Amino acid sequence: MKRLSKKWLLPLLAVLVLLLVIAWMAGALRDKVQPGVLPGNTQQVAPAEAIITERVRMAVTEAVPATIGARQATTVSSRIMARISRINVRAGDTVTQGQLLLELERSDLASRLSQSQSRADSITARLTEATLSLERAKNLQAQGLIARAVLDEARATHDALQADLFSAQRAVEEARVAISYAEIRSPIDGRVVDRYAEPGDTASPGERLLAIYNPLSLRIEAAVRESLALPLQLGQTLQVEIPTLGKTLTAEIEELVPAADPGSRSFLVKARVEFLEHLLPGMYARLLVPAGSEDLLLIPQQRVSSYGQLDVVWVWQDGQPRRRYVRLGRSFSPDLVAVVAGLDVGEALVPPPQD
Image 1 (tube, rainbow, N blue to C red):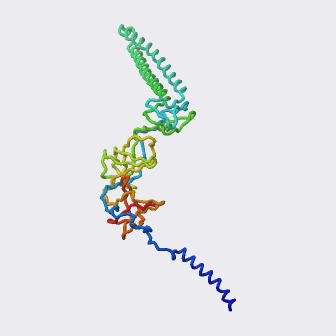
Image 2 (cartoon, rainbow, N blue to C red; image 1 turned 45 degrees about the vertical axis):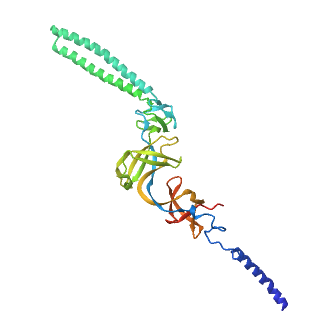
Image 3 (tube, rainbow, N blue to C red; image 1 turned 135 degrees about the vertical axis):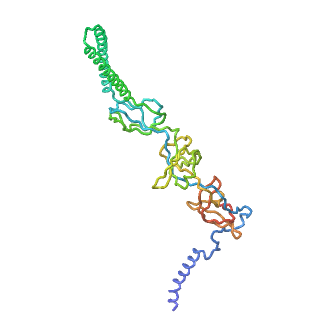
């Protein structure tokens, strides 16, 4: 019997020890601390330091996705078909108005000009002879020595050569203009955005070769929904956020397209922005458009503690600071932030506890 009791005693002791360990790990043997309440001295923050939350009417804005564009931008192309012999700029280069950008092969154009000029010179010589013949015919006909038909023939020859000379001179002018097209110059002061051709390529009329924009003419272009776009006016100033650069700029509305996009029911708004280094066409921006006013629950940013993606505040409740998770909205100043959920009006907000 004693051997049997000893046989069961050890397992029972082991089970008892295991239960005690589980109870200790579960906290049954320690003092309980209510969730959300600081342990120890709960009077570490005086109620006098608490801030009573309340709603404040604030003007709100809606962030509309926008794109940086250039008011003064151009695409450089050729007016004639010719092989490109030289390109003097690349993407990123700064150019001035009238600067030589590209040179086209001009041998054919020079040959055409020479031929046109030779033809004009030949007709000029023949016209000089025809003019003298016409004068002689007039004198002889006045003396009655030749028939009227001979005078008419001389006059017709003179007038025909005069018309031919006019046509030849126009051909010379066209050849000179065409040879001037072999040099393509910058139409504006600006910066080269892209280069679409290389020496040896054949330039066709209207085919883009270079793209240039003026960095001093940048603006914001945004599609604003109609309920927000209709109250906007020319000359009105708005704020623009550039997330990539971490900057906020002031923009002045310079154009309101008076027709909505039937697909999105939005109006295109264009606003001029001040010059900013590293601001380039095509960059993403946010145009802050006024969207009326709203009663918001604002709290000081210093009263918020962040743990990863969780935001926590401490509320004075039942004589103790209690932890409260909140969902924050937009910041209205470096010191104030809106609370979307987690707090009610009239609650006392205390500073975060010191670790």
